[in-house]
Every structure is written in C-alpha cells, then in structure tokens.
Image (spheres, rainbow, N blue to C red):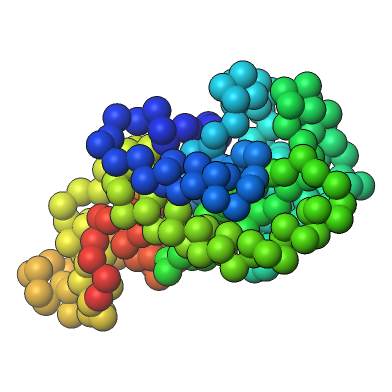
Length: 233
C-alpha cells in the first residue's frame, strides 16, 4: 500500500488542490486534504496543503496504513468530528507527532460516496477553542459537504486518479465482454455476438475480475466504469 500525492503528477489542472486551498482561505481552516483509495490496490492518494515536512513524515512513518481519520471515517456516511477518536491509540500515534509540525488534532472528515461505491474524504483542521470549533462547524458544514463533493468529482473526472492507479491492463476482449455485460447482455448473448462459446466468455470475465481485484462480476463492472475502462450501460 502506497501513499500517492496527486499534486506530484504532471497535469495542467490542479483544481482539486485549488478546492482544498479555498476551503482553508474562505472557511477559516488551517489545513485541508482530500484522500481516496485505490479500489484495486488499496493505495491512499490525494492532495494536502499540510507542510511538506509533515507529509514526508506521515508517509515515512506509514501512518496512512492505520490513520483512523481515514479508515474509520470511510465507514461513516455523516461528517466525523475527530473528537470521537480521543480514546483511540492509533489516532494518538499519528497526532502525537503532528503537534511537532504545528498541526492540531482538532479536525473533521467529510466522507463522500461516488456512483460506483468509491469513497472520497475531505479532511480539515483548525487550532481553536472548543467554543470556536463548535461555532465554526455549524457555520460551514454545508459548504464543507459541497466542497467534498466537488473535490471528489474533480479528481474522478481529471484523469489524475487513473494515472495514480496504474490502470489494470485488461485485454481488448476482456474490456469488450465487460462492456457487453454492462449493457445487460448475458453470457450466452455475448457468446453469440462475438461468435465464441459462453465458456470462453466466462474465462475472459473471470480474468477481468481478477485483474480488477473484484469478487463478483457486478463489482468488476462498477470498478471498470469508475476507472474509465468501459462506459456505463
């Protein structure tokens, strides 16, 4: 599992990075980040405007393997105040070090679900009193949720995520068959269309599932669509 900084990938548009910077400037947060997970490898990738020293330390210490602001928040539908992690030793393992880099453990994660089951996470931090924090949350929550959706949509549409994922090398036949499945065709239908046996169709489908890290064909279809390998049916 790797930690991938999407901002380091050469691309003309950095609008997701612009969004997290705007979140800080316009809503009054110290730092912000956006993260999502590689659906095949489980790598964590995204943007963060934290100090470079902290980003390097975070990655070198492997905090992305167990940071509850990522993994616990990804299980939630509603925004997650990091206060719920006050008794989580993994959380303290991360933020004992974060304080040395001028980063507070007072934060919030806004999860957003994509159309194919993927999850994006917008994280924000603010070093302030309890009263200021509660007031800030009430004032900006709607804006944060909108920013989370914008950041996730921007990354999914930009092509940067595809580069970071090192897209599975599906064969032309595997893509073709998965596309027909997405279009609602049965194995027998696909075999007739392509003039191959339905057992050969199943062989290619199984190979495609394995390359996409999917347990079921519907899951493989969702991931292939999400990665831009086939079109929605």
